[in-house]
Amino acid sequence: MLGVWWLVVGILIFAVLSVFDIRSRRIPVCGFVIVFVYSMLSLACFRENEFVWAEVLMSAIPGLVLMGLSVITEGKIGLGDGILVVEIGLALGIEKCAWMLTGALILSCLFAGGLLVFHRAGLHTRIPFVPFITAGMGVMAVVFA
Image 1 (cartoon, rainbow, N blue to C red):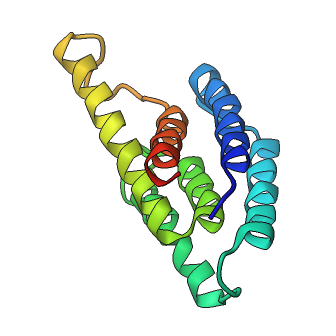
Image 2 (cartoon, helix red, strand yellow):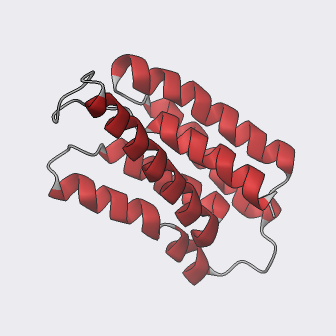
């Protein structure tokens, strides 16, 4: 199980990336590198059972699905969001990553629905997803901690 403080560090990293995603709709390359290093350290230091490659590869499935959806929707879902979910999946494991992604998707749907109801956005409005990943990580931290 991840240490609580270590999970808070991950949430803070994603909070910083959220600012970039909101302002520029882009995630800097150094952000991907930082999340990857964070995930590898998490994998090395906080893995409860012995290191199994099949389990690590399964942890990437939620992010790979998101990346596939990015390709299918021709970029309407950002490829960078999928890459971040793959990277954080390595640290969290498949179950926690799936819960985090589910929470992020539900929160983004509620937000987008609110924007549509109040006529603040149209059907083609782009909404940054990293803030919802951050919120999903926060919810997951509270539920599983």
